[in-house]
Amino acid sequence: MKKSTTNVAFYTPYVMWLALFVIAPMVLIVYQSFFDISGHFTLANYQTYFQSGTYIMMTINSVWYAFLITFATLLISYPTAYLLHYAKHKQLWLLLIILPTWINLLLKAYAFIGIFSQDGGVNSFLGMFGIAPQQFLFTDFSFIFVAAYIEIPFMILPIFNAIEELPENLVNASQDLGAKGWQTFTKVVWPLTISGVKSGVQAVFIPSLSLFMLTRLIGGNRVITLGTAIEEHFLTTMNWGMGSTIGVVLIVAMFIIMFLTGERKKKGVRRHEA
Amino acid sequence: MKRLISIALAILAVCLGLAVWSQDLQKSQGNTGDNTLNLFNWGDYIDPALISKFEKQTGYHVNQETFDSNEAMFTKIQQGGTSYDLTVPSDYMIEKMKKAHLLLPLDQSKLHGMQNMDPRLINKEFDPGNKYSIPYFWGTLGIIYNDKFVKASEVQHWNQLWNPKFKDSIMLIDSARDVFAPALISMGKSVNETNPQTLAVAKAKLDQLSPNVKAVVADEIKMYMAENEAKIAVDWSGEASEMLANNKHLHYVVPREGSNLWFDNLVIPKTAKHFKAIYAFLNFMMEPKNAAQNAEYVGYATPNAAAKKLLPKSVQNDRQFYPDDETMKHLEIYSDLPPAKVGLYNDLFLEFKMYRR
Image (cartoon, rainbow over all chains, first blue to last red; front, side, top):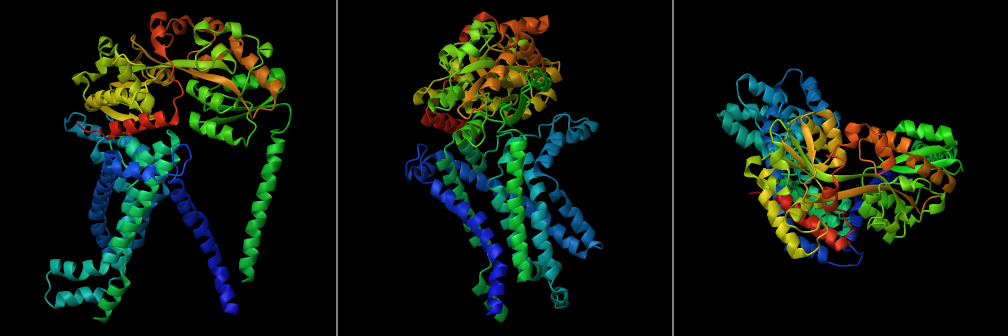
């Protein structure tokens, strides 16, 4: 009896947090998405979304850029996490990787504007070799670069944890049994760290779908994602219904990603049994 | 268990305490007192020295709160939580607030100094007879160019922006109507066009501009232009004056064939309470000396003709910010469009932003 009340007391704050700041806002967004600009109940927002080529194109754009960002991040993070595992002062290196996340996102974006601008750091460096100033800002390259830079810590951490949990003797065993370095990686290390990669992908892909601030500051609105459209609907057009509809689509996309990258319990259990 | 309950109680007590304290704070700030004026203004849009001068002269205390978009201001006034006494909406927003019954008419008998206003800048269509508003600052939409890269003769007209020579060198302001205005004017149409077909044609014309557009950004334009990042920008005169102050190679042009004319006017929202202070402030700000001082601080064009005479000759004769009569005749004010039309503009604008050659 006493134990159960203690339990209730322990999870009450968390449940309240969930209800107030996760479930209630989502319900409100879904509710809003059924109203048109003059406050009438309608399904027209969804119709507009799926019928107008603009929003579909924008969705494809968002997913494509999010994919590129996630891919670039993964490409850098996995080897980094792997090397980190064997590095000497692990905790120090880890701290250095986490440190940039303490700096405000806006400040980092503005710093990159300085680095990439016409007389910025990169161009002065190129200038030393006699290369004329290049256009970096407002290009796909700079957008993906900066987004990847910002997301990298969130990818490295879960992968690093997964690699840390990897029993070293399995790697040794595979080498003893004659596996080549590459085989050890594909047959042992990768499958056992895939859970870290999956949570890393979740942590990076979903926010990347709606990076509206970077699309404007670094992409100069030459890169358009769904976030841009949401911002416009809420702040300029004041069409909250349409903005919420796009929000609902993003939430659904998020659930799809969670489902695709989530741990499937049954399979996992069977694998252990086998 | 006991500890958890006590922690929860402690948090509740702190919340309650803060609520009471903030109420107290508001009282002591004089939000309910009679000797205050609650001014709801754009950021950095009044000379702080003038506020202290006003406070010293009249004994009223000025509380200033700021907003960064007309829409945000509208929402706050509509909710009516704070008793704002004066605010500074732009032209189309005055129309919108009037329609929403959020404005109180001015008592003309208490106003002194309306005769100082430039007759060309009062009695406009968004507020006939200035029943609700007094012009505070005004300006235009135009082209800013950097004379290191661009000759003056190359950017006198909107159509010249489409010159293939300017590939990847123009920055546009991130605002649907201000991007459509140049296209509409260059087609000989009104900036208040609502015909979907005409707007579609304008959008197609804008798509042709796309190769020349380097970026569609907001406040950052000021920084980029000052740092020679782009050769040309389309922005408001107020922003332009700040850019010109930071980079002497920059110039501002209002194309003769037409452009947007905008106003920021002082109005009394329905949340107002301190009417004596309001009229004291309005009259204070209309005094030529004060208006001139404010114009010098903010750097925007003053609608107060008597104040303009007090400004340095170089400013008075600056055709960039005080265009000649011929150009003035072709300027058009944005009217408040119904929500569906605003939506149409913005949807087309999104499509334009997405367009890749």
